Length: 290
Ligand code: 7PM
Image (tube, rainbow, N blue to C red; front, top):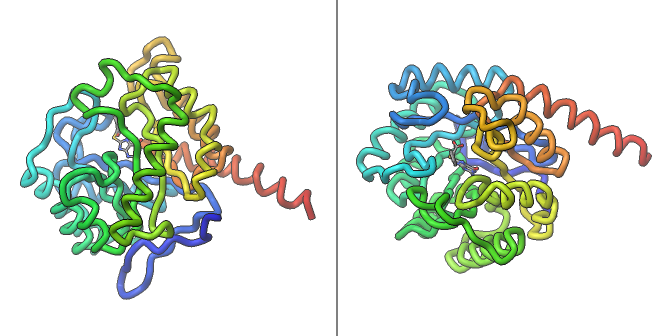
């Protein structure tokens, strides 16, 4: 079974603990110039710090810093560029704000450098499959989120195809848990994410959301990112990203009801309120069993 607390690095000599018995909010902090939902507003460190502080005040217990745009059709980013975007922001947040910093990267060097300046969790959409990433992540001793993606960001939405999307992703994640074990990354350090929108057609995404609880059989905490994604827009008359708040909250409530430990979202204040209602509902079931 899942442990209660996840150790996410240190801050001022203290272990930073993440409570896995509740649904935590991870606020998205994009530091790409082409970030699809915030227009790259946080490209300089002060603006990034300001937005991170706002999300913490709104209820985020983690901040996910990402410097590589993985939106469908996105061009790859050079190592130096990703490093220059991500590392100063991680360092500034670590020095100034009391939060757990997640770093959204697949790059070994970024994993190492981000950990050295205060990252508390590695969030890899490629599940440590890039050259050197497994060993770099192992050495940090930090927790790692293993996400499923079919294909690569530039082409992944062209023809997503599965035998059974739920079973295929179970199989993939189980294989990556094994790969982690082989380099000494224990299960206690892992979180799993089915990767909504990453090489999935509309039906695949909703099958995954429908069957989300099936991933509990892998015995690890779940992280889910659905906020403002195309799968919301497609059900709502193809509305643009800035009109997907209500749909995103509905999806967040479904995922929280199904026991996910971390929700990765843009709209922190709104999602925090929605999840409080879920928590009250889930807690009531426990009370009635007494
Ligand atoms: C399409 C796909 C557009 C993905 C934008 C995105 C996730 C993530 C991202 C996720 C984890 C976005 C992204 N999505 N990390 N990074 N899980 N663990 O919505 O679903 O910002 S990038």
